[in-house]
Amino acid sequence: MRRLLILPLLVLAFAALFLRSYSLPPAPDRQGGTTVSLTYPNRAPFGSPRGDCVGAPVEEPPIPCLIASVARARNDGFTLLQLPFCVTCYSLSQRLAVIGRDEKAVAAKQAQIGRFGW
Image 1 (cartoon, helix red, strand yellow):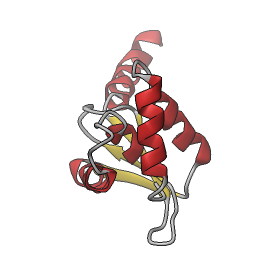
Image 2 (tube, helix red, strand yellow):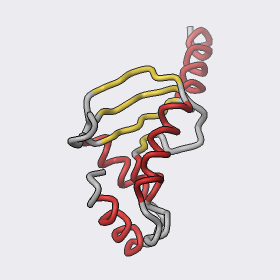
Image 3 (cartoon, rainbow, N blue to C red):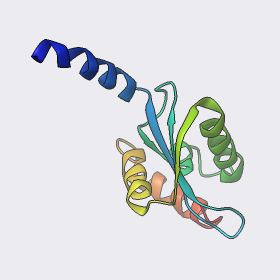
């Protein structure tokens, strides 16, 4: 019986490697939401546009990076689910994005990004 369950569990574990989530906050010019997609594992399991852009220099304007991040997330994978905005998912993605980075630089970049409603 155990051997019969091993193969489906291995298939699910392998598929979970390619499962990614992306949260976009709502704003007046867009509808927010959380997208769950199957894509190559080149980004964090929980993502947000801010997560991709907090490492950029403060002098660099954030809007091009944010737009490119969203476009890349939408084009790179196969969408499985489109859910309403999830605050918990978004805050988790923010916490994962700042791990191992300079706190002052990240705070300055997040303040800059926050002024644009992202």
